[in-house]
Length: 188
Image (cartoon, rainbow, N blue to C red):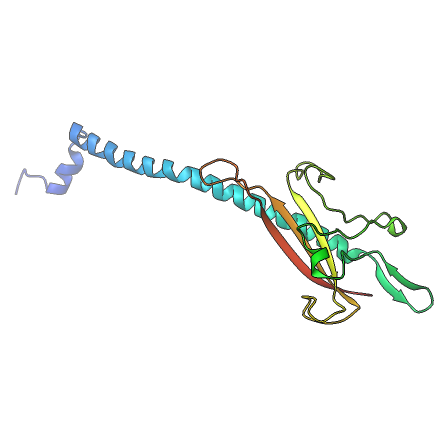
């Protein structure tokens, strides 16, 4: 036992370095990992972009919903009704998003304007000018109106914000995606 070093200390003290075979094996393992990582990059970029567009569309829909919620719709027995909220129609065919009517503009209500906002007409301000925002307001005064309640003092407000997403392969999609928020608003 004298003069012999233990196996561990011999291995630690061995300073010959790595062999060419060991380096080639390590390079092969690293290459496989990098190729796998490179194939995931486009998908992760798509996911990040999709999340950005969905959260922006949600923000725009919430913003319009808050504007509509703040619009004056009151009833006073002495002065009558003040309706700055408006309605898009009384039946389902006039308040839908496809061909429906936005609630009107009200000059008497500090210029409240809830018209449709699209990139081609009445665009949103930059950087949101590629988004579309629409609002539809349906009276809930008839049974079967889709409100879940039949009451003339309640309206169903639905806001849709649309965007054109990227495709997973990097191109732009041909169809629009949208976020749709709804709220029941009562006359105050």
